[in-house]
Length: 177
Image 1 (cartoon, rainbow, N blue to C red):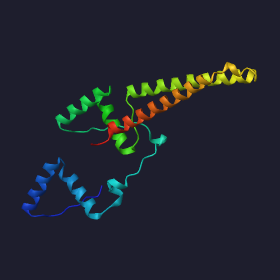
Image 2: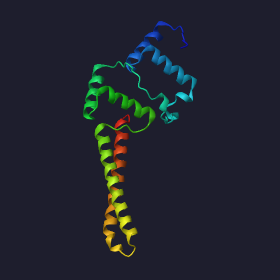
Image 3: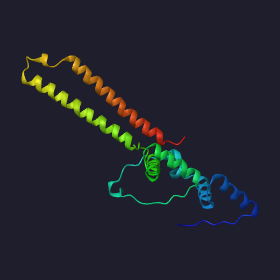
């Protein structure tokens, strides 16, 4: 990577060091942020981020080492444990949700979604059975009870609401406060 170097007086250097300490950044990170801000690069602007689309050809996982203060690591372990996830998996989900802007579901949320899918499949089978009964004898419409159809409609609405709630909750849990 190209390098920027500049000379400054001792007072400015000490002020710069203090600023890095206050922000928990390295000198390189703070200098990079200052240069980006001074150059007004829209591509680095937080407000101009766009959602990523998954690239199946680049979906293999890679390993990265992240160093953080122990109090943050402890908090990450607790958050991961609360979601039923390993710490590394929780951190990966946090990064994914913040960069890709898509919900990341934990095991419990995925299990709930799978249960919802099973319920939708059961509803579909019920509808198929009613359609078959209607098609067998057009005069035997009494085999299909309108109340049952209303119950299916209500069930579909509840299921849709539950799925929306899962997605909303998953999105909110990963958003920065």
